[in-house]
Image 1 (spheres, rainbow, N blue to C red):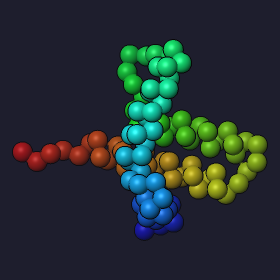
Image 2 (image 1 turned 180 degrees about the horizontal axis):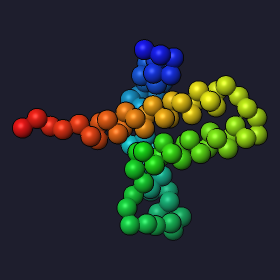
Image 3 (image 1 turned 180 degrees about the vertical axis):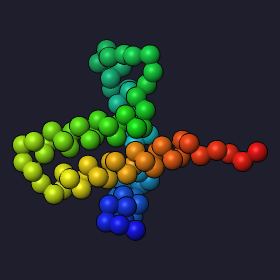
Image 4 (image 1 turned 90 degrees about the vertical axis):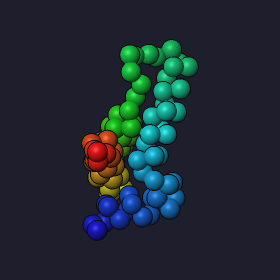
Length: 94
C-alpha cells in the first residue's frame, strides 16, 4: 500500500470514516445547501462531483502557496474518485 492509499484507507478513515461514504455524505449536504441558496439542476451532485469540487478547492489553494499537503490531498481525492467509480461499477453476481 503506497503513502496516498494508506492515508485514505487508514489514517483518514480513522479520523472521518470511510472515504466513499464521506464523499456521498458531502454531496448530500452540498445538495441541500445549494437548493437552499436557490441553485438547481436536473440531477443532484454525485460523490464523484463532490471529489471534483474538493480537487478544485485544493488546486485553488495551491495557486497561492504551493504546499505538499495540497498535493497529497489532490492525490487522495483522485484515489477516492477511483474508489467510488470501482464501487459503482461492481456487478452483483447473478
